[in-house]
Image (cartoon, rainbow, N blue to C red; front, top):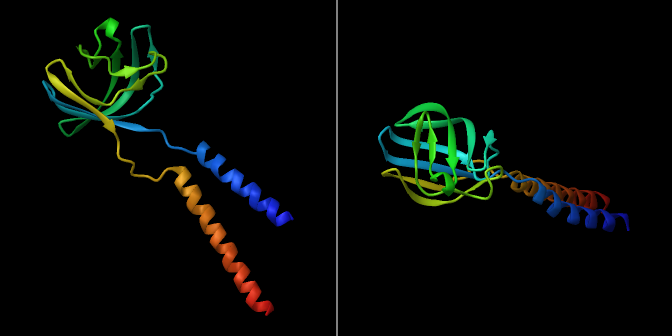
Length: 159
């Protein structure tokens, strides 16, 4: 009976723990044809703003690559009421609003957007590291396989 209770408890715990352990979704930003060159950066799909107003939010110390050279800038994103688009390093380009939700809790849109005479593409980043839930599932599978192996070895020793 205890064995059945353990199996039921584990089978209920695994999906719950897997749902809790997840990596943040990241988006790649790629601006081509800007006066400063090609700019690439990666941000969380739903970032936490360093500051925000009713018409914009700011992400501070964002690492980016400008024509192969690394840089760090504060980037502002604006609502349609403020002209949309984004800005950083003293430059502001109007365009479509690049996020949904409020400026205090934004989520970036994906797609290709015309901004200030150049093109900005926002797309999901490729995941290079397995998510914690995948690792957890692998670990529980290995534990189960070890348990079965132990049971077979113990059973053969008793026979």
